[in-house]
Amino acid sequence: MAKEITLDLKTVKQLLDNKEFILNEFDTGDIDWHNEFTYADLVKNENIKLGLEIGSHVGQSTNDILKSFKNLTLMCVDYWDLEKQRNCHSYPVPNIKDVYNQFLSNIVHYGVANRVIPIHMSSNEASEYLDMKFDFCYIDADHTEEAVYNDLCNWYPKLNENGFMCGDDWILNIIKWPSKEWDECINTESHEYGLDQRDFENTLRKGVKRFAEENNLNIFSIQNFWWLAK
Image 1 (cartoon, rainbow, N blue to C red):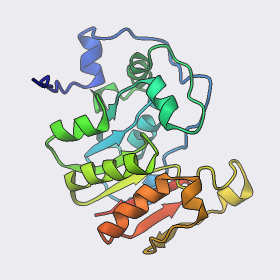
Image 2: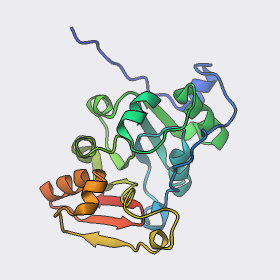
Image 3: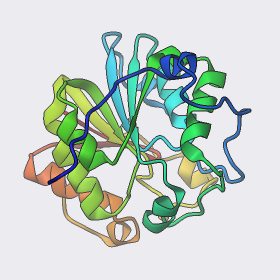
């Protein structure tokens, strides 16, 4: 018989008040591959109240998203397992002993503990149990084509009207960072789904294009960020 999973949705502040984790000092690890969240310049919508982040790691992107949207509560889905991350990312992963506990601690130090609800499970599992609508979903977990495509399939139907899916690493492995070329990547909109060499160097793009083509969606991008509007 399959094990029944129940979700106990608590904010990080509630977990801290209940002494459900040990508060560590702030630490984001020894490798910095974080891209600052820039959607605040693109999404002029003060009604964004509930968001979802798939792949939160140690909380840097979580904090940036919350800074961008002042009225937002953010649910963060991650299995917080660095060994699994090493298997699904092409870049180095910081060494942190207990990454889930460190995520919770960092969220407290960022001062946003009452706005973050952690979901300690895989994206596929969470999509089965979270029965609610979101204003947006930020995908930054497994970057393989199938994983990105599955995340889009699982979460796009859970968007509110006028919601959007988004993520980063659109030009990862394609344009050197930091560089003048990276900085000059402009805001683009595309209805073209054909694959080129860039998509084979960065298979995340293949997953996004595949889903966009099946659903007749435009792909928007600026620098390293991409998004699909509902």
